[in-house]
Amino acid sequence: MDIKKTGIITLCGRPNVGKSTLVNALVGEKVAIVSNKPQTTRNRILAVLNQEDSQYIFMDTPGLHKPKSRLGEYMVDVVKKSVSDVDAVALLVEPIPNVGAPEKELIQRIQQMDIPAVLVINKVDTVPKEDLLAVIETYAKEHTFQAILPISAKKKDGIEDLLELLSNYLKEGPQLFPEDMVSDQPERHICAEIVREKLLLLLDKEIPHGTAVEVTKFSERESGIIDLHVTIYCERNSHKGIIIGKQGAMLKKISTYAREDVERFMGTKVYLETWVKVKEKWRDNPYLIRNFGYHDE
Image (cartoon, rainbow, N blue to C red; front, side, top):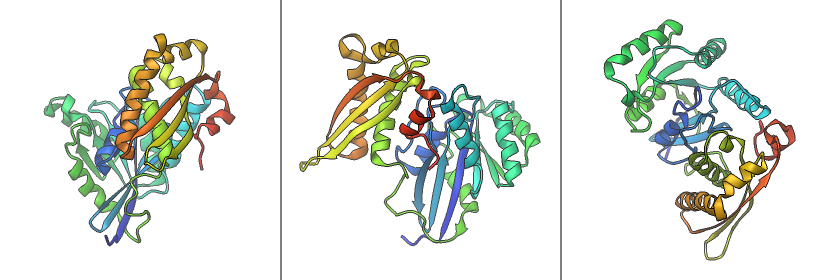
């Protein structure tokens, strides 16, 4: 593949607007975890797509929200830093004719940085087509977007149109990432994120947001089987009991779902062991936040 053009494009928006679903649809592989709960993504995730002579580099960011902890402050900081030094920004919004505070803040940031921005109206499969005109008009009054595109990331509708649109912001230059690379996340980090995705899927209310996942062992046997040891941290003993469940049933379910996904991702058999530990108020502890992999480097 002879790459002649590259571009870095930030995907931003409020929590739960579908950024991670979109980045997975764009690159055709699962590089970001997805759930129906807000604030699923905590780190900036970089995903790479090579198409003909072009290399697209997408930045999936946490949702912009009002932070309630040091971890939340870190996530918001990641978003703000990601909307700078890029070739274009795709602002994802829901098909609602109202510009909320998170969108206004991101639009203000885009205007300050003077970055080309496209408006991507996601989840259009959830509303009648005639409702979209009001959404387009509402956002057009707020900012002069280079283009406005309705899509459904979940159904993969409009993905090719979006890529064609974003190709206008690629610049002539050498290949930035290897051909076989789809994400900048190390394998062990993606494995930890898959476990966290299952916590978000299977647990209710605040509990999954108070969890962190650490991979303590990641090794490959000669046979190709991967030994994966994972520790799930939560903030209270009562939460630990819920995560483990009656006679270990919930932890077993989390581990089974996670192992199946990790095996698909790694393309080999995985032997997964999980433990649950309590680290009180870790989301407000800068040392633990860094220790669990949430830092700027």
